[in-house]
Amino acid sequence: MIRNPMRYCLIATVVLSLTAGCATTRVEAPVNDPFEKVNRKIFAFNTHLDNYLVKPAAKGYKRVVPDPVEHGITNFFSNIFTVNVIVNDILQGKVRQTGNDVGRLVINSTVGLFGFIDVASRLGFKRNYETFGQTFGKWGIAEGPFIMLPLFGPSNLRSTIGRVPGSYTSYPRYIDDTGTAIALQGTEIVAFRAELLGTDDLLEEAALDPYIFLRDFWSRRHRSGVLDGQDSSDDPDQSTYDLDDEIDELDKLE
Image (tube, rainbow, N blue to C red; front, side, top):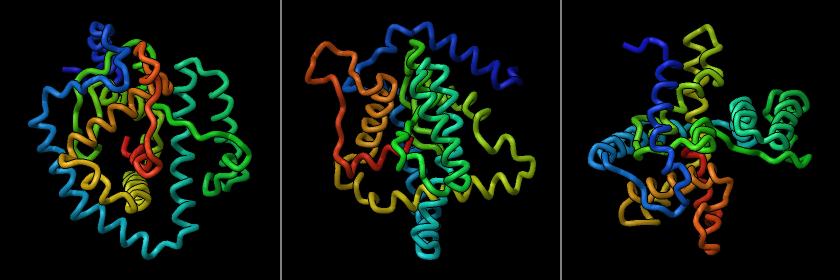
């Protein structure tokens, strides 16, 4: 029995490395979804949970919390996540981006009042998004099959394993009081769900099958993140993956 989660992560990563030949999957390649039947059931569970719990909470939150405060809370949690981004910048060898993101964190944590005000963006410091799943992809580890996680939503085996080291760069691990950690995580979930209320009908309108749309959308965005927007195919028309502004809102689902 594996008791150490980091040891589990290492073993799983080595196993995935054995299929590293698939790691350069182009953005538009078909999604490997051998567990579709199970994934669809989990998707249905997540949808019901959202409809009956998270979405109503987000609506109430949006009614009660003034817009400036709402955006400030979202900025606060985004600023905390920058720590995770910086770690992955370093692991991917992105020197310039590391400097940018360190600058964002310092500026927003000080001048921006602990991140509530996104001063860094106004000063030209771009907001980046990096995860351990993307880092593993950069290292040549295959993405593995698509997985719909309970509560967390779309993922693949590589990104799911990436959640283990990701837990060590996330704030809940370093909060001693369990109640406080749960309260913060709950607030974070509701705050980001409130930001997505404007896209509620998008999945239904975009396709006859919301599951397939979300699966393919997430997979393309994840691959694009691994490839930094550059498709690995030889077709120049497939070199990037562009999305409409409205659909871009779904980036937050990762």
